[in-house]
Length: 285
Length: 326
Image (cartoon, one colour):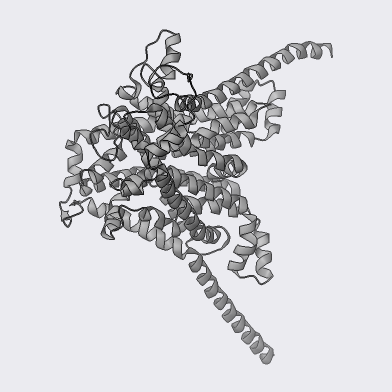
């Protein structure tokens, strides 16, 4: 007994030290990830001339910079294009991917595994691999210079969304689907009445990822719309912002912050869906 | 006797007929659910994959009809010095990003997993940057790593170190991009963190009773248990590195001073082609020089390599699902 007490005391000390070490590491990590954004924010509210200097802290706070960028560039136009691309793509993805994911998760048919492997393969394929023939086809249809070559595929097939939705639908107990069938539901009714309501968090996560992926997309808009500035999305426009205005660091950083706003807002409102969705892409392979 | 047998027979055929009708209906349902996906796969993946291989044996500028040139495009790869540069740069990213991303994400996740207070806050702070559009994330680091004026150089100045030209220095441009990729690796962190938190606590308790300290517990229990997720992280990083495009283009063009990405070709790869990755060179050849045949040949090479990486992942997934069944 006495020996045990004697052991416990240094043990408690070590535990306290361990706690301090781990928590200061955690704090340092949190700061490390946040600081770059803080610098961006501080630069965004500096005056034109101060943004060129070594200063980290703004002498005066130029909140007007966030409004001035709208005069310097047709940001609302770009915002509209981004909304069109991301919004339509997400709607199209939901229409096309939910039934396919259900068929891959809950229906038994020959060739199902092969089709699933094709979905995984398509998900992993670098977009540059298929760019040449697709650009050739879209240019033959006279649709290059618009966002339609980027939006249209989502109404038929989006590999990542099908994959993620399938993973979510797999976790719905088969007995629920079977019960619906016994009650005389068709597969379509079982999907709409049972699976869709139960998979709502998964569907929300997939929609979020689809929206963000298209919002952040650079290669697609660059490929199809780089010659047509009135079709640019925010991501593409941001990459050229500096050049158009002779390196106005404060304004460039103000736009950089503004373009991140939708993602952060979505995240704040749907943090749990996000985390769930991310873990599903990796763990439940 | 015979009468009952016959009746059973009749019943059986009726049942069989019903079953085959149900089967036909089932097949129709599957087809209806899968039709858009199958059509979409054929149009946006099946056809362009085959066509890419076809185009790779031609000379094609999008205006004149393709002209068959045999293996010429593939042969040209060996005499194209920038092809070699592009392969070298992309291999650099494959090696560095695979190791750095997995180790970094594992380290951060291991720290977060041991926090008692503030888990949610730290996790959110570490994850948020990964939501930034790649263009924005690259510009963020471009600001932080501005030569002389940037916060990083101010920090190094405290130790009397004078920073290099960072994104304008051919030695430091690639590490700069790698730093951006680590800053946005929050999704991999969350995946690994979930796996670490999923390790059954009894295993730790047993090890603790045996006198194993936190480091040994981590090495002997946490690591082996989450190894499937680490394999996913490796494959995921390889794929990411193979298609690295946006960060390289934005970093190169921002550093070259004229962020006019869309107009000119000479900024791609700046400085000294150190950011000219394989996809960037493919894009330049195909959509700036309109040498579609050569771009298609490069695309075919990229396809073969990423296919191998994907096969690795699929193999792991199959193994994992077998383990689940047994």
